[in-house]
Image 1 (tube, one colour):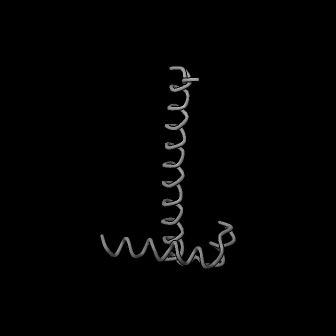
Image 2: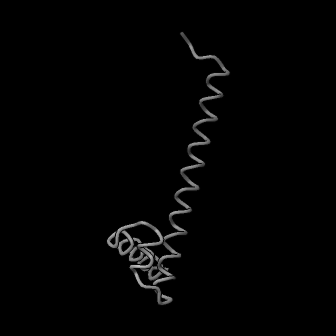
Image 3: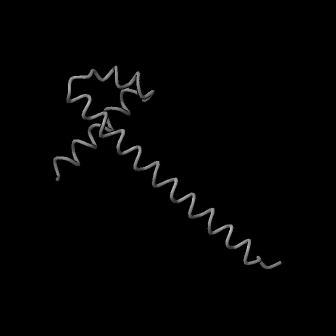
Amino acid sequence: MPATEETVATLRKAVRAKNAAEKRADDARAALALAMAEAIRGGMRQSEVVAMTGYTREHVRRLVREVEEQQAQS
């Protein structure tokens, strides 16, 4: 049974919505990583960042390191 134009249009719309949501989530994660790096540089203890974000210490450390490496390359 071939797909109708309406079905194809609905599927395309859903794909676009998913892609847009993933982009927003990626942007939000990048902004959070940057905010964590700035907070730690500003004197906030890593344990405070961990408590606020719910991330593990290692995850915070890795994300902050990635931000610092990106900034060093810029």
